[in-house]
Amino acid sequence: MSLFALFFGLMSGCFLSVLVGIVGSKRRIGFGWAFLASLLLTPLVGLLLALENFQTPTASSKEFLRALTALFGVLGLLFLVAFLFLLLAGGMLVAM
Image (cartoon, rainbow, N blue to C red):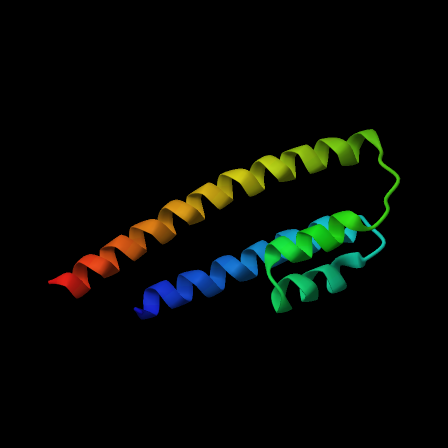
């Protein structure tokens, strides 16, 4: 595995963990616990834990969560494309 792929994976995981922490900051779990859970487990599990905690929804928080969901979707697709590109590029280098 190349150093760039390892660095990209670590940075994307940390970035997603920060986003999960932001979601958790508006809930009972708080930023710190949501961030720690997403770092230790995975960002998806941390997001599920953060979303599981109770919050009284307001109009602005619903709009914020919609925007954050769209951001997660776009970033998830970008990271998936980048990962597949790195995987295929690494496979081509090994095959040569």
